[in-house]
Image (tube, rainbow over all chains, first blue to last red; front, side):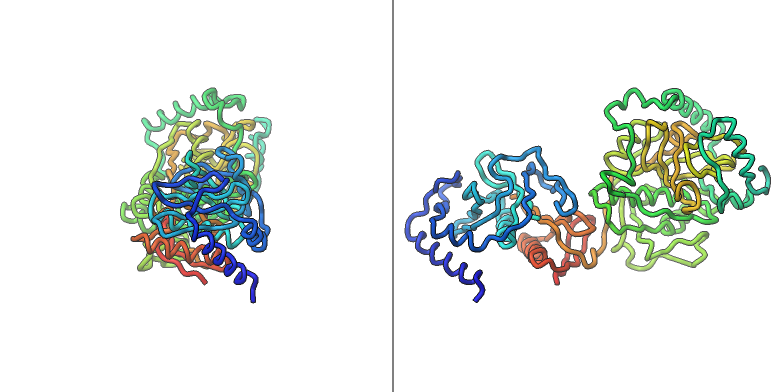
Length: 160
Length: 372
């Protein structure tokens, strides 16, 4: 059986366990919107799961400013990472875990060292597309280029 | 070298020698033409006396300002040179074409502006874009009385590119005088490029440079003297010959050190430096007569089999984008949030699998997509 299937099962079991307790903010910077729960910090057991499934990829990453249209060029085409709005601590970090629950627009991505970051809650489709893109980054082992707002919420995401 | 005679390149060289060889003359397919045949390559109506006086006044001012190859005083912030054929190693200029025996140079210069802007705007040098000069000249032009003999001007031509758009060369291939009997195919409007607007930069040297840097090529009209046909290399300035007519080409760069514009001509690769040339600032009205640009150019067509190289989104409603190989960033459309998410998901799945997609881009908005 593929390891990914095994991992998915293990993670589900872990999440179920933690769901029995009230979700609480962990050590990482966490931003909660009006009453919506936040994911717990990854346990050591969960960290093991993460390390088993993240593959290495290109680490050319910096952060880009917010805005409705993309401005960066894919690194494989020689695009330079934007340094103008780079935020220390988020560059070159892969998405190692995802979390969502039944509240509206409450999806999170766990970055390698920055920890849990909430995805934009601006609109329904914005929240959904960002969840898809974060999941794509997770699946491919890509380190996204991100821009976060002052509350620590991810408002812009590039994945190469 | 007047009348029906072919060009005496030796006489041109002798005249150049007296001016310390600013450029090199050479025999080519044009110097072997008769005067009448050469005239068929010139498609810009000559200015009347009053207009010519204005043009001369403008050109004299430009020549005075840049004499000695000094940059203009008010463009200190601009780089000393720029060439759309080599922007950080990338070439944004489409291939050299040959208008043949038809005064359709305006269509070629205008299409060069459209193609260059379509590529340079989104910074996609690999974009496959070959637009139909025939559609512009024989299609739109004919609606306003334009023929191979009348010539045209770039502003009305690029205005048609803005209001209606032009289809691709494959849909209506060019031939001199439309001798191949081409016509506009039904459904062409589903495959076309369109300008977002025109911009008149005539007699604004600094703004022409700034537009080249930011957006793309600019047209330039000029008086052609006989010696221009024999141009091979160097910085062109009139040294000899008579006035043969008006012509239009595309300005694709500049070089302050040489005091010259880099131009793309439409006389095939046998003229100039493989179809390109350098023309001195202020010479023959090249920068003071109908310097027209477009503010942007968008494309409507299927991408054909391409790969998705990047994904982007913000939290805004339906603001998912994908970077499609040879097409650049395309905004994922959707008349509803569900449709938007469905297409975005399909495209990301293809990216994950490094699979091909074929998306229909309606001026940069994906409205339909296949993922394989």
